[in-house]
Amino acid sequence: MSEPLRLVVIGGGPAGHAAATIAATNGAEVTLVEDSIVGGAAHLWDCIPSKAMAASSMRIAAIRNASRLGISDAGHVDLDMDRLAGHLDGITGSLASGFTSMLASQGVEIVKGRGRFTSPNTAVATTDDGEVPLEFDAAVVSTGSRPWEPDWAVVDGSRVITTRHAYHLHEQPEHIVVVGSGVTGVEMVHIFSSLGSKVTLLVSRHHVLPHRDAEVATVLEEDFLERGVVLLKGSRANGASIENGSVVVTTEDGRRVEASHALLAVGSVPNTEGLGLDAAGVDVDRGYIGVDELQRTSVGHIYAAGDVTGQLPLSSVASAQGRLIANHVMGRAAQPIEYAKVTQAIFTEPEIASVGLEEVDAAAAGRKVRITKVPFAANPRALIQGNPRGFVKVISDPATREVLGGTVVGHHASELIAAISLAVAGDLQVDLLMHTMMAHPSLVESISEAAE
Ligand SMILES: Cc1cc2nc3c(=O)[nH]c(=O)nc-3n(C[C@H](O)[C@H](O)[C@H](O)COP(=O)(O)OP(=O)(O)OC[C@H]3O[C@@H](n4cnc5c(N)ncnc54)[C@H](O)[C@@H]3O)c2cc1C
Image (cartoon, rainbow, N blue to C red; front, side):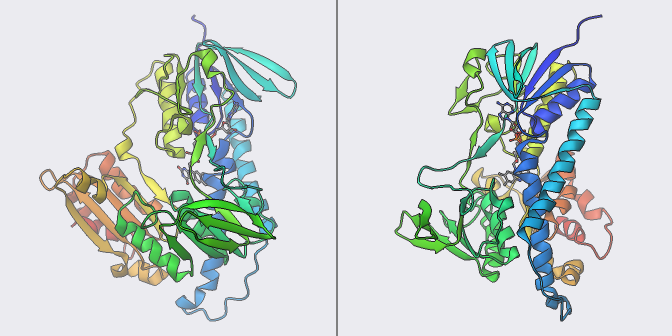
């Protein structure tokens, strides 16, 4: 019997966790080196706490707005930031312990420490008890990324913050300036405005979410304005600090905004420093690790997955890349990821979800497409729930009738998009969406309708 393959995984976020679990269940001897929690930044700082905080903030907003549904005295709502933080920590803790015991039961050796390569076939984990040497036949670098802290900002972690500090504020911000109107920025605006904070959003271009359909951005901006969010467009920040007890954010066009807090959501940087990538011979480009379609780095038996590669920075993509690596390394069928078919969601209210081709991409490529759109204002369930904002858009090929993509903007869009995602993944025809009998009254009926 041949010796099992020795796989070392550095970084236990969605990418590393998926690689470790699939490789171990298929017979590899896996060591996972993680310096924080299994589940990674995705569970500790990003996907999970942000969505949990959004869920709490939306509940508060729903109570405050209950009069729209005929409820006249919903009572006084009090927000306890420390209890909220405890709730978020509870979710993270229970996920981390579940993931850790699942990996242990699969035979994965988890080493708590900082991993670093010492050669193309060896690494070392620095732990509280000293250095643990590791030898491997294959390795995965899945060390993720962290928020970028520009040198013009004085981040103190309590008043001038990034998303890493947003979940443990002891007091609710009275007025928070969110710098950056990409996905993370708009999600933070949604959270803090729902909690009841005054919010100012610095938008460096003409509209929020600059890379998405303008129509999508318009719906979101309408909602923000209705909540009283101040949108400062065409404003690029060049300073954020505390002056005389106030947070001051300045912009290149000479604006100066005073607030109680500022949150920077201006991008991320890969965690590749101190990893010994040069000792392993792995090439790095501006901090990111380049990979081929099977996630191999410049050193064939060393793979990279997740945010550290600079590819689509989503937890779902990181997991898929980790699974792909494990399958490839174990000699199983490994299909390269079709990035054009990845479903993406933005967890604001209304939520924004899309898959496949977007109208903006079709126009840019000069591709002839059939676009059908239905507003949620015409959907009975949306009216019943008091969430008529948004629409469903289905994009198909006029000749073959194949569903090429779709966008849902509305309540629960991240769940509703599944019907279109399935059609895109399966190259199904729009007729199937049209003829599928959905429940009535339901939000998903708008997808069948939009397919007509
Ligand atoms: C606020 C926010 C919200 C987000 N929400 C979503 C969402 O809703 N859905 C979604 O799909 N994506 C979301 N993302 C993106 C998602 O979080 C990332 O794409 C995902 O975490 C990437 O996973 P990863 O495995 O590459 O790395 P990570 O989750 O970053 O994990 C990497 C791990 O490696 C560890 N590590 C680093 N260096 C070393 C070392 N030398 N030795 C040992 N361990 C090391 C780190 O401590 C960390 O635990 C969000 C991002 C942000 C910022």
